[in-house]
Image 1 (cartoon, rainbow, N blue to C red):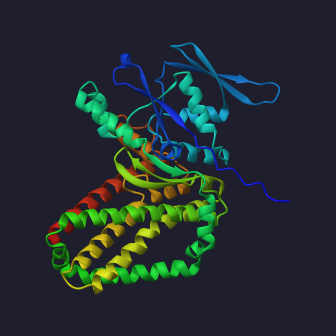
Image 2: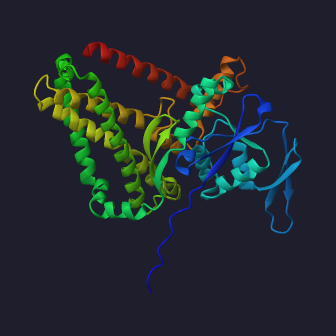
Image 3: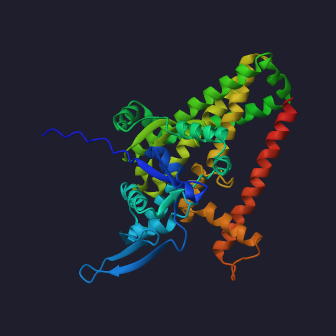
Length: 411
């Protein structure tokens, strides 16, 4: 009997209500693709006092249900206990990825449809809004009445809607894995990665005293150099996401989507939907996160080695050295969890700790301390929040100082 081909996973189209800065202006409806929405979106429930929640216990099956009421419109929703759990995390600070992680840690499984379906129900009842998270978006929202600002905001939303993607990519990743992708997840590959990193680091040490002559290789084409280095780095981001997808195949999971979009409305990037890894083990989730970042370590080391043996002062040497440094920095940023950026390393950390909203909780704790309203009793979790804030602050300051010193030393 022939197997029936499995249909590609459905794309969860999220139509989000975006509240205007002036409440009298009402709402806008914005639709964003599932791959981008899962990473970026931070749903926010309406303020306290705008809703009521009451439990309805069933005497038949013993399941707990809840009635959610919009006090402004007298709309009622029946939600399950898992939906109530999700609703409580929709505070405008927690991303959909963090909400999904919290759901897995609580219930031990993940339903790919429960979040989009719940969001739709809450939107129809006007119980959910989306607020701009970036400072740029907040500034634009405050001055939306000005024509130029309105045009800028519209342009950002238009870029966000650019989403070149495919949901029928599982067979492609399967073939790449069979044709050699499986080699990336062998002990030999791990050993080769470590060896290349050591050799690359040694090459970097030998190049460092000659940094000024190396950078001089860009000569009269600094603009072309910057553009070419950035374009090449964008392609390596695609390779980073490709390896994430191959890791899913390695652990028997499904790649739901792969594509290209503009992150935050203006940063071009590739992405892959790896949410199916939630059904795997913790080891599978960690390997999936780390494997993509190792692409930058390998490429960075390779470029530094090329720079070492290229002609001194040539464009190739300068290009290779700059590419290598950018790749190494991308590796550190991707895997280092203490930098207030929710990258691969951060997701590994919160998975190990079992606190999917670590950054948001830590920032809230720091804000309470600065306002003079600390918790009555200093707990182990408070100590964790304080440690995260301290290490992240020192790390960001050190990263900025290193880059400033690097530029000064090179010039």
